Image: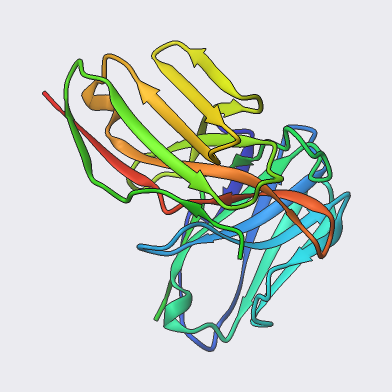
Length: 116
Length: 115
């Protein structure tokens, strides 16, 4: 139990499908994140939300659409994905991304996405 | 491009030995440094954080930071087969677009502890 819960844990979708990943954090944090982890690559930051406002979009293609209705919930809406988008998508949360020192992030268990 | 560099390994050590994992970073302004452990098929879990130069010990783990050399390391004493995993170094780097200090990760070092 990490305090950050992601669903579904595994998702297989076709390139024309629309699906969503869901994340909920129970840590009382103010910021939430989406990271992407592909084989042989470092973790890539996708989006940052602070107090439910998007503060960072790391040049992510528009086929990935985030939504943050409040500080505890984060979604990643997926549509017309490509096979190369298959990866582990990690949600994370932290207390304060504006802190110069000590912004520690905690990850959920991840959602394994396969695009066929 | 602000980077975090790690040797991908694998680093193989015998059980009971000291495993030494290294990381360098490019942003001189970084103030926060983290080590995460990631087992195969799992998400990263935080092991250690360090903010000041010198050593920080937590059980069998010791993090070492040298900001002048832009170098952070993790020592694992009395290594166990259960320590076999990928170890990710993360450095909080300021993102100019939103003013946030967000962890940037290295590729990770694969550690194998053999009996």
